[in-house]
Length: 269
Ligand SMILES: NC(=O)C1=CN([C@@H]2O[C@H](COP(=O)(O)OP(=O)(O)OC[C@H]3O[C@@H](n4cnc5c(N)ncnc54)[C@H](O)[C@@H]3O)[C@@H](O)[C@H]2O)C=CC1
Ligand SMILES: O=C(O)[C@@H]1CCC=N1
Image 1 (spheres, rainbow, N blue to C red):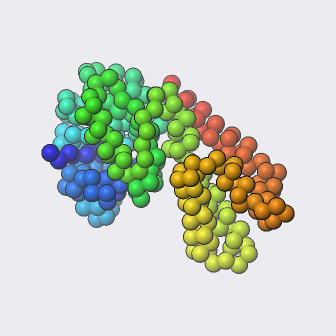
Image 2: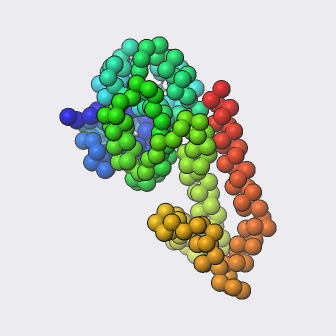
């Protein structure tokens, strides 16, 4: 049986998930539907991935879908659920991806039993490297869980977490690609300062971040031990590490993630 995935809202995160779902082969393009109030993003999605698009009609997109992904901004959840709730089929799975939107608040918006899933993905879904966290409401069956996990695994890694951890997840993975892009940009700027062409500098910086991340994930070694292995005594790396420490890199990163988590908690109220 083929599953239809419907995206209500077709912005950055929807595009990343659609790209992952289609490119991985999880779903044929004609089993992916996206709606949006403006045509431009829909046209690009159709052109790039060949999916079905529906302009200004969330209701039809909801009605057609086995898995309905609410990919609008958090403040629009109330309005969009009011619009589509009677069109969402009783057996459909509704996936919320918004920061700060809780299962309880959104169950209440449906006003009837609904299969509800809360996910925090990230944009590397587009290249099959997302980190997603997921939690389920009590109406979700084992078969539903498999459908959701297959979707999330089609565009990266996914782990089930208690809902109480979702704000921390937003800080450490939902938002964190942005912090890493800053880091890559800054490293590349320094390489450019020393004469490297810009494009080459991005490749060198980004591949080094990718390689370092893979080392953490695949060797199972502590990040501190991996760092020590790069720092030759009296060498170049320890000079850089000392400069990062004296400029407060760790404190800055902890403060950034903490601020993000606090914002997510505030949005949940
Ligand atoms: N961008 C990211 O890295 C991540 C975003 N998210 C969540 O994903 C959700 C979407 O975020 P983005 O894609 O970044 O935002 P976005 O602004 O790129 O996309 C939202 C889309 O919704 C459309 N839209 C506006 N009103 C609508 C309506 N009434 N019905 C249907 N569509 C409507 C907009 O035209 C836009 O294309 C947010 O709730 C966010 O918290 C979650 C994880 C990561
Ligand atoms: O910035 C935001 O609010 C969204 C949620 C996680 C990543 N982007």
